[in-house]
Amino acid sequence: MTPKSLVAERIKTEWHEKKQLWKLVYDWTVILYIVLPGVIIGGFLYYDNLFDPVPWMRTIPPAILGFFIFFAIVPGQLRYYYREADQLFLHQQTDWMRSIRRSGLNFSLFRDSLRIALVFLIALPFFIGVYGFNLVELLLLYVLTVLLKQSLRMAERRTLEVFRQPLRSILWYGVLIITIGGYMTLFHFISSHTIMISLVGLLLVIVYVVLRNERIGRSSHFLLHIAKENEARYMALDQVMRIGGQTDPKPLFERKKPWVLFRRSQFIFRSEGASKRLAEVSIKRLLRTPHQRRLYIGMTMLPANAMLLLPGGPRIAITIGVSLMVLFMVRGCIAHSLEHRYLYQFRWDELDAFASEKRSTFILLIPFTVIFYGYLGASFFGLVGILPFSLGALLVLFAFTR
Image (cartoon, rainbow, N blue to C red; front, side, top):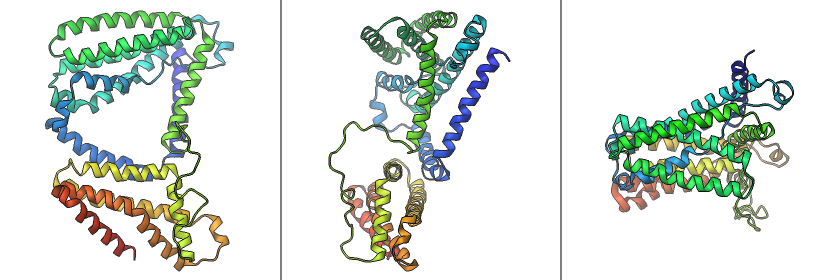
């Protein structure tokens, strides 16, 4: 066992834990309803804007794009891949701990390089189609961004070791504001002052090397690094759980009174009947589940906005595909709600379940039908096409669920 193999084993174990967690919170429906439509729609938009950007993209200055890219790459922490047991078994072995820190910094550099490359790839329509950056300018910006991200993380860790609050926050946010201004300036002058910015990049390489050697050689504040490692590990797990809908972030404010349809379990339909009560259960179950609400809203709004940007052929194909996927998603949620054991203590039969499925399907698909097909009508005929397409789609939906 060597220090490199030990760090590699810890990285492998951590990614295996994340993989198992991803399997718990995601299933084939997420790939079918979110990932696949997002890739198809995003692929069309990306290809079109790469060579022929839409007019609003040309109104965004390079400095503003740099501002957004900066905040897209800032999240993340410096990783050493320490463990609590290292204090007992490895802390006295200076060479081992130095090698572990070096391997952790190498992997952090590799990880940040991939993340920043992905951000640059997404922003490529701006770089090529709008600003006309060449390959040398893009590579220079990429290298500067990677070095800046790593240098900031190492400087942040050093401030945690040396300074206390509130001086630590004042110093860190001051450096962050200056860095944001400098990064936006790089984007603004990259084409006209390439040589000067290359010299700035050389200076940043020196700063990175100095900070990296200082990090590798410094063996103090072991408990601080352990705390940051645990924070990074649990933060990653918490993010996966939030994205998967298993946990919800703490709200900024809480309502004292519940929302409509959440208060006293009031009835939706006035008349009695087993089929209507079952339909109420299905509707309320979807509305009260945060993950299903977000999925429904995302599958409605993302393709609807894409209708305004895509050409005619892809519009029709996406309309058919998205309509079927939303229908299957809603019917799947309804069928799952009717399988709850709580409902079997009441008197209802298969005919009631069938009638409730049709009624709840109609109610739940009304927002999607009005919004999505209204956008579709606007994409073909402008504002005049919104009302006819929405009403026509509602009539088809009503006939389908009678």
